[in-house]
Image (cartoon, rainbow, N blue to C red; front, side):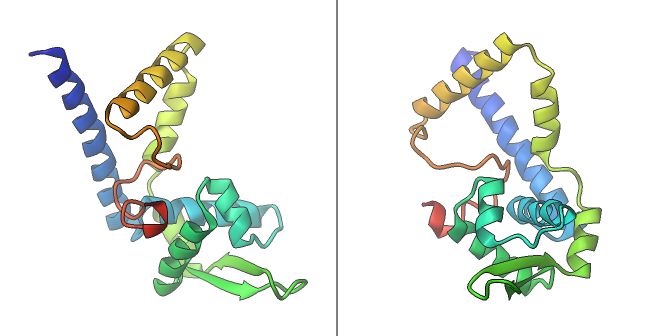
Amino acid sequence: MNRSKEVLIAIRKIIRAIDLQSKRLMSEAGVTGPQLLVMQAVSQLRERGRHPSLGEIAKRVSLSQATVTSIMGRLEAKGLALRSKGSDDRRRMEVTLTAAGEEALRRAPNPLQESFVEAFEGLQAWEQHLLISSLERVADMMGAADIEAAPVLETEGLAKDPSLQ
């Protein structure tokens, strides 16, 4: 087999792993990867005693505020989260998870990126640099170098979000 086919097969395996994890997440918790990421951010910020705003959540998950607003709309429609005006500042929208949202968060399997990050951080620095360089080169070769992307391994949800196009 020629090397370009080997690379394409490896890329396809990565895409397939992300797709399978996305389907598992949806079947077990009823949410997409980006929705889970937002819910985790809300929960973590709440544990610190804060009512997070959409802007704080967006910053924490490396997504635009418009994207987080869209994700929040879907979470509210599912009854998993609520937005309300701030008690101190009525212009500020604060986010909380509902009891159903907390339960979905408990049921959710760990996102694929968490196991990846753990394995990646176990590599030597030179291996990390080699992987980053190689993947950036592949992205460039596929015409994807200038595409905005968040550190979320998800094939659904984000791709359909018009604010990312």
